[in-house]
Image (cartoon, rainbow over all chains, first blue to last red; front, side, top):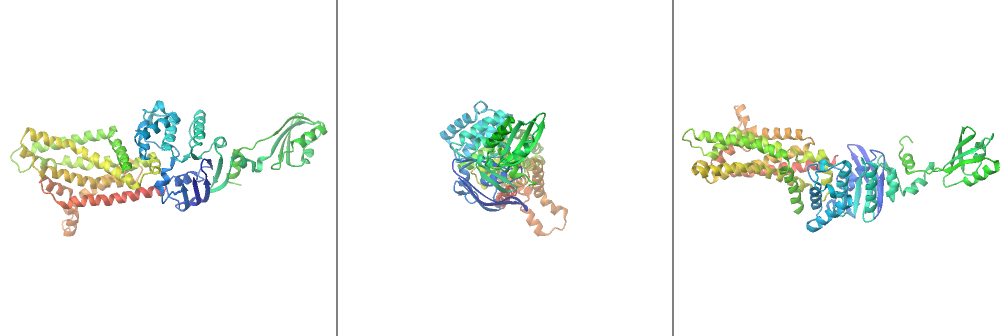
Length: 310
Length: 251
């Protein structure tokens, strides 16, 4: 659905994005992650034919976003950051205008407006002026506008920014349900959102793609992925030296808490020495209060891949 | 073409569904009314060679209203879209840049023309109540309106250019005012410089809006301004189109 090859954008000598290439297949929901200023919005704007790239090529639904931009734009719905809307228009009026602009007309336009208002929960505000709507409703108006013409591809730039947790959940559910029929590329800072909705994540930093994979794989590849937490009562023995000898353990740190020792055990990737540790404890007659594996999160992956002073 | 009409309808509703438009129209009509009142007062002083239309279109109030209206009409056309960021949703919809520029220009022109409609009513009422020959006949009546259309295209296009250059409406209005007034007063060079060359005199004669109105309100339809103003408007619109594109591309 999207194909990006060697895309570069320079602003007055400063490189916004630097030779990025990626593909998004039909029906995928892809999360676009990166710190502020990494080039997410730039990439999305180029894909939406808002501005041309300095070099490289991008196609949407098989149409070049620069040379066949009108055709490409017909296949795409774009929700910019901050959801710009005409404040003097009413919701119905706005949707009708945007629908007509996207080549809908007559009965079909009316049908689509009805469906989309139902889907985005806009029924009760149809006659209200956009200027008087809350942030959450404006976001939904923007979203409704982006998909009014049933585009094959939705590009959403931070669709949940500035919403309260309930609204975030609603929008997330909406995006998930849309994923059944549309291809979606969305950018966000909320990582749990990506884990909940996206089938694939592209992490971009300083104009370059750092990683592109499923959320699970990204987490699994982390250096920090293996961390065990152990709390034992082991009389006068020092558990560190014993634990260090267990295979798969890289590093052990222990803190005393009265007679309990709580240990952080770093392990090699893709190993799980909990069984050996349990056997060791039984053998040394330690009492175990906790033995758990810390789950690395996408947040860890994000920090590790985009941390600037690596 | 349907896309163009959708855009045009949106721009027109932006004009007619806003209270500011009616405030502008209100003050415009006051100036128009004053202009008409002075014209009638002038003619009632005694026998005159002037027709009512001629007197109306050559008063100070007419020119003030005419010149000040352009910045007010055009200032928000492009700058508001840039300010609100709606330019991003607009230009990612399947519309051409040229359609956007043309629709904004045409909407402003239609609004401008509609502002002159009440003055037609003045003449109709006057000729119905009074002496038809005082109002003027034939080209003496429609001539000035034809010229208002041509000069309006020219000045509205200048306003469009100013508005496309900035996202601040006040700056857009100031720029438009400077452009409109600057060109209007260009003929004054001939009064300031005593020995201005015939070349300068000939060149400034092309944009001598005062002189053009004088001859058109006499019923003399000169085709030169009728060709010059729209052609120049087209040139300025092409410039606007390029500025509009450039501003997005460098963002």
